[in-house]
Length: 350
Image (cartoon, rainbow, N blue to C red; front, side, top):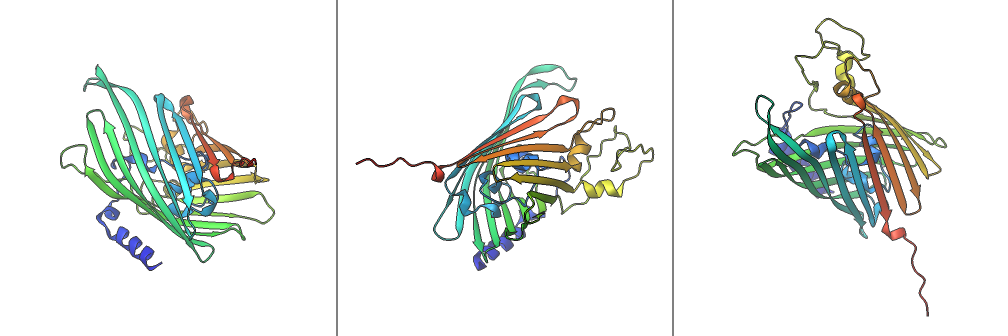
């Protein structure tokens, strides 16, 4: 335990923790993508999910646990513009209290038109990003756990490329008897070994998050609350061409003033998950920050609201998530998990 605390203090003291980028100014932003359909269904960020879902270990390293033993997970996402992302993850529990996991995530942006300053197409270019990661969680005092992930990333944007490392650390309380869980997670502590441009090192998308979930005995519904970007207050994208309609309830507001309610709720994601007989899961969530960034002035739509459906049968788990956006730019996410340890074993013949 002392060694774990020393590691946490060392990571928080490093230069990477001092990073506090505003929206759009951080490099390698894909590191904050959850790559889990279940997390996507609960608003895109969730730090209070626990269980045998091995896809949760990437976003919350303290969630690695022995119920994930010998589970492999494959995921894919279909995004607008022909962009595709995917991941593969595996977890293994050892005799002591530690569970280890590792995997790989990728984002493929496809073949992109290259234009000059006047918008004339002058060719094509490719872009892709990869992250290889491994992590571990140590469980103690029955309901407490501490975990960390280490990530090596590679990003290629046309002829520019970058390589670096980042770390996530997390501390969790998971009291399954009282159906309450909470986590504090610091993501992407680190930096670039090789920047895109010579000696022009950029900040990573550091984020400090707090998640809470609770339910009631005999009631299949759990409520989730996630707070993100806790180290900076203003996470708005300041578009000088946008209207001043920034308030929380989309009411017309001609005055160019900030709405305190809007600023607060941009940091909060609320959601709920229903678990029906441990076979079917249903998720619903609202992400105010996502809604404000994806909505259109002339189309209200349901951007910011996400839905999910999960099915768990013995050693198989399938999860689907839907994130609607304006103008038909809906994203679909799919995660498939297989618990190898629970596969039927062949009977030995004499």
